[in-house]
Image (cartoon, rainbow, N blue to C red; front, top):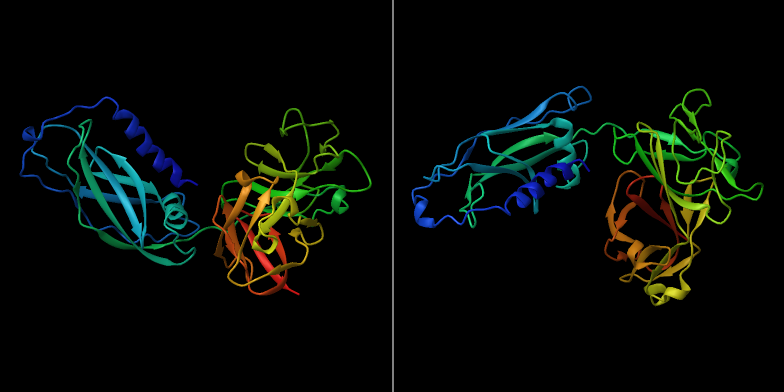
Length: 356
């Protein structure tokens, strides 16, 4: 997420603090003045402004009564969530509107494509001073229209789905990133190794129609040079991460897609496995007998290091819940028999249930 680059600034600042001064407090005036964050304009973002316009924070400087450089940190808040927007030694900070909207949605859990009221404030500390006093401005509230462009799609035709350009859709991880990710099984009974290609959103062989080419796309283990990607019969299940801008494909082999929970007493040796429904482009479990109030998790490769949980409701798919790697246990959908479906052609994975 793009907000990570702003968190990285904080990490750099922390490293810089390894060469610090232990300035006695008596050298710092007791008559200190906090910075004053000026009103922030509402952020009105749309398809034409997210990439070219800036969100600008300005403030009156802090005064520590000591002639030393001041580090300013701008924070944004929404409810109980807080995120560092950026840091510098000036009296203003600018961030691209699209980047800021991404921060609001990803780090503050702001609702997408809606009007969200958030708060911001500035903290001032003395640069390179151990245990520096922290002077904090009053909070300023403003509205952010969290416009996010629609995610694009690419397609993954192959023998496993009879080479249909229209069968296996993959959505962008984040809109505008040109990065796509899918958990897929490309096995079939007709041929080995298993071949597939990548087709752009036009769903046509005319346009982007890419396979392995030494001078173009790169894949983890290209086995042939005939224009198709290929994987061995022993490794048909995989995470594919595709970037259409850099023309790279990363492959992570998956040995098993399964679920575990109270329904099977959390027995690792008795995990029901999902199977990939090619026609629907989803992973489907066998019928599971859930009990209301109980819990379960998705596990890949039979490993707790690859567990997925923390169900969060989403409007992307009706009745769906987003799950993320490392998440907490997922509540059972109720008491009864259910088929669980994983929509793993998007990020995060979305879980849906069908009661039997």
